[in-house]
Length: 245
Image (cartoon, rainbow, N blue to C red; front, side, top):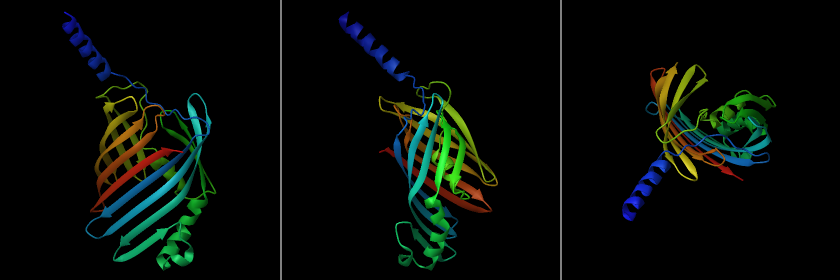
């Protein structure tokens, strides 16, 4: 009888753990500072164009309320290597102008204003970006905030197997993301990412994401996209790592 009770209790424990619910929210605290590291590789066609970008950003949480937060972001480092039509171009923000070739100097002139800009963002605890402001106003800088936000959480608590979706519109394209909870532990929530791209380009999205359970921050994510645009296949891989300082 004792053995039977033990087995029964063990079974109930396994079921209860398996059905554990998690309410996903961004639980920022005022003064929190995060370092965001992003690596992006893009390849179009066979030798048509390739670009590798590595970027480091600093994010400080400047205000937190019951439902929203405010933050400031700055790009602290950027490295770009691009090949197009037989031309090679490289840029490293940590290098001085005299250390760069002519193409690198041209890229430096374009990218340096972004490194000096401060991006202020207001978002809610579900992960939606509500407002962005760039000082000084640099075209394209606010897009970095949108890229760094790859998930919007559902209103309800989730269990393993649950799915939800998010749509992002960008430059004539609609990105339909679908998230599925694959694992829940005491420290993290793991998601499988899939989806479709529609609009001026069409294609598929695959990937994965690891969310810190306590803070709700997506500490690791990997997104792969294969799309068709203007008769060419474009492969994009984006990996992001977020570390609290």
